[in-house]
Image 1 (cartoon, helix red, strand yellow):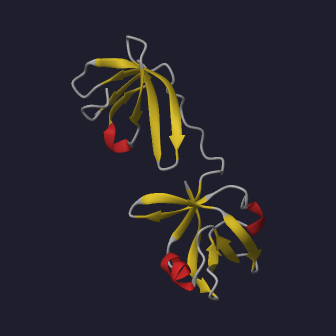
Image 2: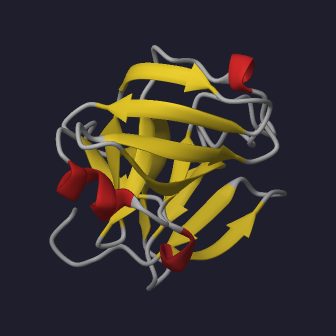
Length: 159
């Protein structure tokens, strides 16, 4: 996800917030797509109910579920992220072999599920069953492009 703004402070008593935009013009923000604010390390989606640019680097915004001064104050200082921007193209791992931490062949990558903040891989096992496993940098033990092999530390019970 791309950090697009910072909540500076609450504005008024109805839950509106003042945003400082980071390296993005107000017109480049897709108001139909969610933005994310982290709470306890997890991205929580919010939609814009209103968005009024204030110059080129600031905007007044009302977000879904933020209805009071107290709610808005809770967002003050938090970063705002979006995931609808085109990022660097990632390598397609579809068809790669997947091995577990003990070197045992688990299956092949059938597809991926891009859940915000939690990308997962669909792995097709030898029996044809597909399982969903997290694809996080902490779980990647190795990536061999020549052989098309991905080695993951897959938590017990997921397979």
